[in-house]
Length: 342
Image (cartoon, rainbow, N blue to C red; front, side, top):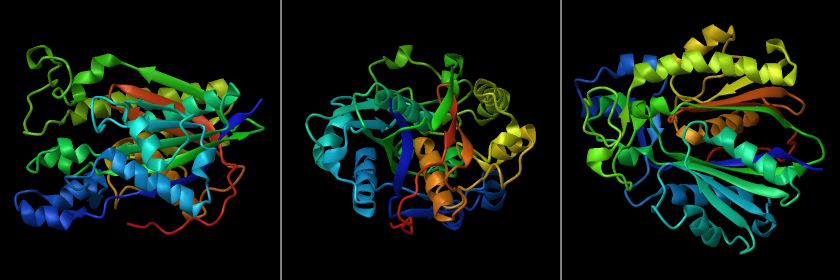
């Protein structure tokens, strides 16, 4: 039997950058100094009006193919995680198959998950490889939340950035992904939602948990999300460790969805970890939803903070409410990682 192993990762960030200084100049009444301290975000990349999640994903995948000499014909399955698809139908993954020149014998599917999506994607890829049906899975995470955000929305315009990551999951003789744990609580659906654009009639749609103060299509109830996170994630960490028969000190790095600095700092305290073992790196990209974890892995590899044989934990959490975690052993020993390109 073969198992899934995380191979090379390439990222793509839109050229346009919104800095806190620009937002301050545009909105003199916003206290960007305080906002920056709380969020830990000082810049974010924003897609152009004609740029969709699939466009970002295509660029990330093409970089993966070029930078790591990956033959598109070797891909057996394409997974595309996004909450901003090009269309309600067809499946965006089908469009990506054609644009990337993948074989017509590949499998391709979208899955609509946000901040837990990368861990879910790894579990799907690992499962496909374990069946023996495939050997190489291309997992693309891409999001353009900015299209749901009104320019005057101080609460979320300062947090979310657009971006994409392409991750190659390859067959490996030993398991490197283990102890997957998942969680779902639909009672939190009203804390982070876009309730227009689907088939549900507006009068029947889920409504924001509290008064919607901003005109964005995207609504976020930050305090409720914070309460959910600090309650669910330490428990998830313990469950993953228990399933693996491991202790907290057996894990080298705890790689968590990069939501905001304030949220991660609370989790650091709850888990008794510091910046070295639970890194926070979102200053220049913001919260890129399902792409925060692969971007974090990409950056840590480039800085040589991730090395083969390191045992790490991956945790995603957020919209849904949805959360997921697993243990991951780094085994990739590829070529030097290129500097980020725009």
